[in-house]
Every structure is written in structure tokens, then in C-alpha cells.
Image (tube, rainbow, N blue to C red; front, side, top):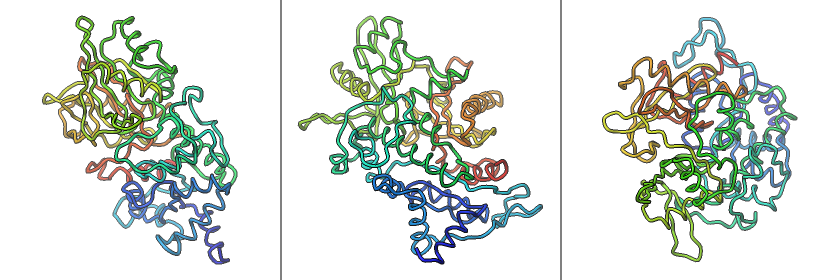
Length: 452
């Protein structure tokens, strides 16, 4: 790095309005965040690609080495980093977009972690970083349930040879361990290089939210409403037989089974059996390919309905091997004959954008082409909306070092208490919905600038 660039880097690092965004460049999330910063006349975030971050960990580089290299490249070749004071924070002024900003005043370097998904090279390197023989500075301090995060495994070298297969779910437990090791490295390096910086969501919290088993424990211990677990399975390596035994013993006939680190309905199974006839049904996104020397599992774009016991057992055993979270199946409320839950965005202590996810099936994720409806345009009463918001805000309050999350809230068909069924540290990618006239990223940034 030449002297001029080095000086600019140091100036930018010290800039009050600076932001470092760890993510996959040029996707909708990264673009959305940059647009929000532009909306408030803030300098572009320095985008640190996950793939570059992973290579630095493997090579034994420091965070300072990484940031300087990325700053130089981004300044000269991609998106110039403007080193300047923000145009907001002056009483009575507005940003170029017309957004009132009388109380906005960025006070410290902001660090934002975004989702690592939808990038196969990153997925492959995370699996390699989670391997027993992984290279680089390895730290498992942030793996929430270390002893139970052990699934099928592959060497680091073999992981880097994996080739893309559409939808295939590769070594999920090892992937998660690799991601937690990345979070550990980042948290430590930031504490050394950038002690003045603030995480939007703390890496340790992200690891907990990602692990559905640990997150359920976390929320339950804090007194937040979550669906009851299937007894005797928590934290254990388990499978079909153990699940059926517990269900029979406790007279539970319907459960929701989740891959502990799955997102976007990956690894979710709505399972039920008839205690009188023994007939069973599993509705899931999981597909199986048994055609080769080894069976593998993949995410199907459409829900599948299995009634064959051998196939159901094979799927549940695989989820159990990688890490299973099993909850009692609470029937969701319905509207126009469709079951629904609500994705509620929360920042700090305020509820923002909210979208109903509606489906003829029990699995409502929007990427399965289910219907959506903005909550403010729905039939829900003010009291019902208030209850959903309160439940979601209670969930985020249990993570005092995290600022924002997309929280999935279940409204029971019988009424009464609402439940958190998922905490999504990256759950803010919501299209075509506004809160106070702002999209999700612009609202998050407004909240951050106003309160941090």
C-alpha cells in the first residue's frame, strides 16, 4: 500500500461515520445496506468479502492486514471509500433523501455482519474451517453446544474439492462449526485492532441465534415464550427411534423437527403419526438422492410429503446425526384457510416491519412461494399486533449486545400466548414493505444513528 493510500486508510478507520460490512459483495443484502448509507449521506461501507476473510484466517494474517488490502482494492477498483464527515447530525437538517435527521449523529465505527449464504465458495471454505484438520487460528469458544455439534465430517482438503450440486446440504454441523470459528476470530481481532468500534450484532449472539437448540434454551431461561420441546431429546445425538419413543411416552403425536442450524426452512420437518393405526406423515423441504454410492440430502424448492416409514426414518436419522431440534407442533392461526406466522423486525427496543407468511401447509417460509401480507394491511386487531410485537421485542431484549433481528412469531390457532419460533440475526431482507416510510435497511440505520 502506498503512503497516500495508507494515510487514507488510517483516516477512514478513525472516521466517525465509518462502517465495515462483512458479507458477500454485490448481493441484495450488501447493495441494500450501501443504498441505505447513501440515503443518509454517509460514506460507503467498506465491504469485506467472506471469502477474503476466510483466506486470511487460513493464511494467518491479521485483521489489519485484511482491512488494508480490502481498502486499497475497494478504493482503487470497485467502490471508492469517501473519507469525510457525514452531512447529518446538524439540527434541523435533512439528508439528501429528505429523511429528517435532526437527532442523528454517528459516534463510532460500525461493524455489521451479514449472511454468509448463497455463495458456494464461501460455503466450501466454512466447511474446511470447521474440519478437524482445519488450518489457521482455530478457536471453538463461540460454538454454543460444542459437544453436540458433531455431524458427518470431511477433511479440509476434501472440503475444498467439493463441487456445486444444486440444493445439496453439505456437512451442516461442520459448516456451523466453521462459521463459529470465523466469528471467534473476528471478535478477538476486532477487540485488539478496533476497541472503539461497535458491533451491530455481537458475533457471540449471532452464534447463539443461529443454533436453534441453544437459542431455545436461551429464550426459555429468560422467560420468553417458546414452544415446548419434545422431552428427553435436548442436546443429545438422537434419531427416529428415540424421537418416536419420546413421543409415545409423552403422548405427543405431532412435532416440528428442525436441523439445528438450518435457515430458510432447510431441514424442517412437520411430522405426525396416528397412535391408533401407526400411519405417519412427514412434510418437509428435504429431498433424498439414493442413486449413488452414498445417499445425500438436498433442499427441495417444493414441499415433499412422505408416508413411507423407512424414508421418514432415514430423513429423521440424518437430521439427528447433524443436530436435531424438536418442538411440539402448535397449530398456527389461519386466515382465508391459510396458516400463518409473522416475521417481525425489531431494532433496539422498537418493532418495525412485519410481514405475515401464509401457507396451505404448516411450513410458511416465503421462499417456498408462500403468500405474504403486510401486517398493517391484515385482519389482525391492534391487540393482536401489539402481542406479536411485545413477544418479538422480549426476544431481542435477551441479547443486550445485539441491535436488530428478524423474529418469527407464532400465533396459536386457539388464541392466547404468542411464541417465538425462530430468531434470525440476518432476518431483515424483507421486500416491498415499509415502516414509517422507510425500507428495512434505511430504518435500521436510522435507529442506529439515533440511539448508538
